[in-house]
Length: 496
Ligand code: ADP
Image 1: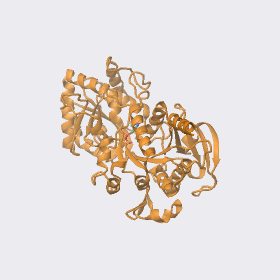
Image 2 (image 1 turned 60 degrees about the horizontal axis):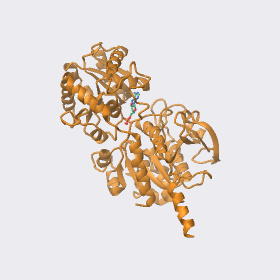
Image 3 (image 1 turned 180 degrees about the vertical axis):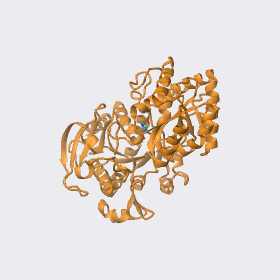
Image 4 (image 1 turned 60 degrees about the vertical axis):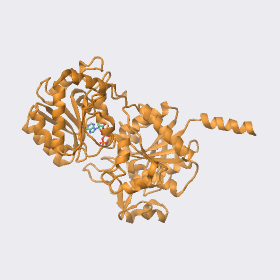
């Protein structure tokens, strides 16, 4: 008997950990922000670390049509208003990560974006669309949908998948543990509480101790309350969201989870973001041979219609154009940036008033300010490679990826001291290991002051070269993030 038990123990130790991620986006199929990059890179990193990591996605057209080698796992039948729901499994293109796809044409097969229609109006049936994602995740976790595979851990991302944690808490089945990751607390998935009945959750979950939030129904709260462990994408943001200033009204719920909440810093996909091999770039370079970076700058200035001045410090911004991202602060600091001899290049889209103000600035300062409204992955790579400074003046920033890309491309980040930005950029005033410029107050004056410091450093070539070397030597790898998630999964499984 004893030998048999030992064998079983040994098998359990050596069997790969099975983890199911549930998310609404994955790069390059569907991306509205950093979430897509994280999901795309984290699962391969978990697989490299020995886990059996699979992904559950809604069958949006760009996903359902791209996942390869699909086979039907089960017919789910009518649920959440969809007459026909089928669970399929295949592989993501490029990375070959195993991916379950919820084929529910009535809810998912439509034009527009994942959360909004082509005019930016939220889909009226988003509650049903994302309840289905959480519901399928929970039933897969319980081993009820795929007879051949059930996860040890379910890892739900953002409000889109958060209901999975509530469904698992309502109907505990099997030993699967839930983890919930907040990528941005500002987007909460709020719905009419009168629609609670659509979810099929027990009535007790309608209370403030459940998913009720100030008279509404909050999907984000479902993840925060009911996941075994909650993570966010940087240690700094994990601390911040427990405070009223950054908690969007959920800080009390987060404080209530105590040490169940932690931060694990995002990484950089080192193949996708590599100035040595990046096919989008006009020239290649690295820390040892940085000359190609100047060729990238010249090509970028030419493409953007900026004056071909190699010695003008070029400030770049790649971002959603919103108040969160501090675009209004940048507009306020622009006169100082121009007075200091800088150029500004912006790629992004978002709030109409900010887009128009940036376009007006470009018209007012031809050759000095250029703006490209829209989403352009290849141009983002060229902008980050060709700029001298990458701007991330956010009011709040869960992790931020563009400053990490900037570090890797030797484009020094200028960031506000919040969330993941504070965790990843060391200010120039720090004599050891400086990698960029950090400012505190969310004001144009504080940003302008940081811009002035950046220009002064830029004019000091040896200092600039040293900072650029430091920046390019930073190693924010997905492999270390994957190890941290595996340690967390192990703790959740152990019940700690
Ligand atoms: P958030 O998720 O809050 O938008 P992150 O910095 O975490 O911010 O991630 C943003 C991602 O989207 C980065 O990969 C960035 O390069 C990319 N991105 C943002 N705007 C654009 C754009 N207009 N064109 C191309 N890529 C963009």
